[in-house]
Amino acid sequence: MMFKFIWPLALIILSNVFYQISAKSAPDEMNPFASLTVTYVIGAVASLIFYYVLNKEANIIHEYSKVNWAPFVLGFAIVGLEVGYIYAYKAGWPVSVAQIV
Image (cartoon, rainbow, N blue to C red; front, side, top):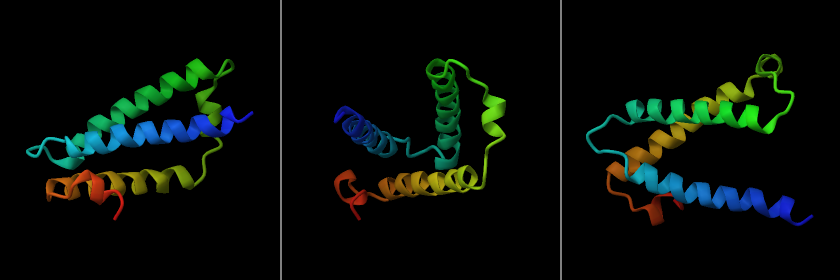
């Protein structure tokens, strides 16, 4: 019972560690928006694979028919967050400070 509450937080913490390290390690000479295109292609492919692996009766078109405004706004918000972190790290913010501020 307790596992259903703990595993999502463990996933968030682990993912956040890799996220911050990766954002800090983005190449200085690469445009952050170009970097994010690679990020989102990998994310889209991984999401599609997990969708089909974890759903026995998967129907992606049916799922897309349920969409509302939230995934679109979330997409813009995520781009803002990620580009903001990349630019903050390029400006010299340390990981230990930027994510807390």
